[in-house]
Image (cartoon, rainbow over all chains, first blue to last red):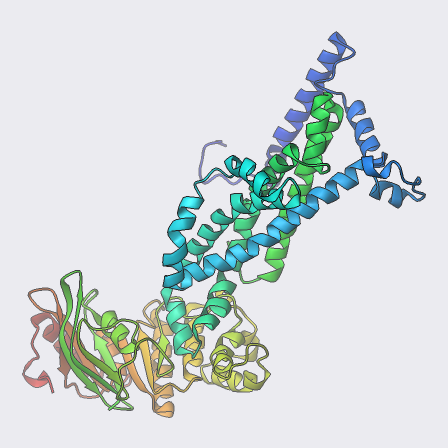
Length: 282
Length: 257
């Protein structure tokens, strides 16, 4: 057995062990380091223990959010969880995230039209190629001035940061559809829009979804930047707030929670893609 | 007259690909266009399809010049002949649906599509499959059904059977000939395989590069043979057509008509 054979075919068990190895190594290394630091300093706050993190996460999931504290105490567990800090933050971030992702679909349509209709391509392409190079975070102060510090500026930041990439990606995907397919469409009596929507868009859509999936992290990155600077709720707002108090016991579970949510969204989109497009092979 | 090509010249970046092609194809003819790779066969087909336009000269299909491909010409390319996102049935019903302006629902065309599929040797079970689940030969059968359901006056086939194994290819050639007999469509069949050109076409046009590298057309007046013809006679005819192509002029008994 050689590790560096390109035709190697790892068996199921070694493959499984290898794929989880870095997770296990990371967790063990953390626990060991945390244990050492706590032994040296019982008030250690940079590397909380598992018990501290679990307790902090449970608190976040049960403790009412700032706005809800004044209200009457919720009765049921579901009501308590729904009004909790964690749920309030998650819902606030998820709402912004979903609006931003939804706004990427018009970007897909724009990219499709730019590639299909040469005059639209001539009008928009150079602009978006340039716009794509602008560092979106550098626009943040302008966005705050233009749109205020409410939701709109954060959503605009995400759209400005990610939409040009999605547009240009869609242009490339559209152009990769073989010319034969478009000619075939014409010979079967399809018009320009029928070809654009019924032949090309349907063919590129699974790849477009993959492209959006790959951009989810960028969406989250811009969303976090916006929330950290100007927000009163959201997961990034909480992390920024707790950073001031060195609340690593909550920050770390929050970071893992965000990663878990993104992973779930990614997995969901991937599964949906396979379900919706059984013909798609990649 | 189904197709008229009048002194068609095609130049790309001052390089001449087709050099003054004159060709007239009657309605109902089965014309094979043969020639070595890169001699301009597919360019000629694209001119008829109206996907490309001549630098000089004119191409008329059923008496009119067209700006872009339309329903006048059916098209079966060598690759990417089917829409990968649609089932076999959806591929075949696509044309009638969009022509009828129906964006949704295919019930009205289902029976007709199945009839065409059966005609090309496919079953109802195949109709539910996606193109990637079919063999190359089956995919081309679907592509032919997809084109023929539109009843195009002209059917253009660009190396349509080139990627198939010899056995499947022979079966497809016979099928194509039968379908042509039944439909009466004018067929222009581009191939680099001389045997295929001679056996399929009622007329063979050979494209030959001249000394400057641009193609000229030689209209071979070949006797019509089919797949069951005498093998020696067929081999002799193929050799004649090929040597004629190489020499650039028609042989004594293969004078251009």
